[in-house]
Image 1 (cartoon, rainbow, N blue to C red):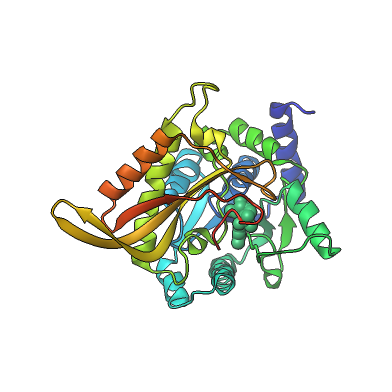
Image 2: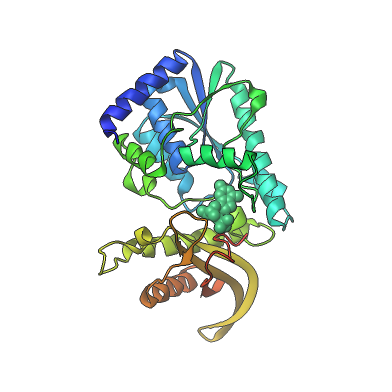
Length: 326
Ligand code: XMP
């Protein structure tokens, strides 16, 4: 139970005391935790903080641009934006196995980050957006209590070789507290209350081997889905379907099916829509989206995204299905 403005003042003082005049680097993913950590540390030490934003080319539509706008242009945070799309696409070429893809993305991420971090010779601290549930989770996995079904990797567990001290100002906060803190620091509501997005990004939402063409089609379909979820208000609760779901996204299926368009026949790819409701992401129910919303989304995707001619809705709950398809 704490008061947010006081908490900000205290947290800023604590960071200043901890790092003094040292330089700090932070790996920015575009997610809530690393963005809030960046805003907080920037408030404490300004230009002594440099963020490295590794863009693997598997982000959502305009996501990279939004991160730069909000954090760099509006808040004035120093950000090195590394466009590593070509490198990631090259490494992923022909790799279809989900875990192999995760490993490659994780490895490349660390490599690109290290390369940038290594250029900042004066940096003494590595900042991370670790939050309390991450601390619990990694403690549990060390004692063997949690079984990792997927090799989750986040920016966490980065470079011991860099010889940096760890700065983790969100370590004692729960997710809702991190969000409140983000708002208090001036981050926009849509960023702070965004659905979670996996570290490997669209890499695990394109089934099988990743291709640039697939990523581009998926980004456009996904953006239409999210836009309609945000714009559709449930009359009973007065809330948008984006807010009524915990996670929603499109999945690219590299399967072709037949369709008709005008007088012609099409033979194009399929997109699956996934939307779930959950409190802890360990179990999840598929979301009962209104038929009218599904109809609008499917109509728009098929009309606007040339190359997709069929849209399906995933009605599987977790377990036994997982939230992501890979
Ligand atoms: P699943 O698919 O396991 O997802 O039911 C549970 C939650 O974890 C997210 N997820 C990941 N997050 N790296 C991440 O950072 C990953 O490799 C990864 N795989 C799944 C998923 O988006 C959901 O919120």
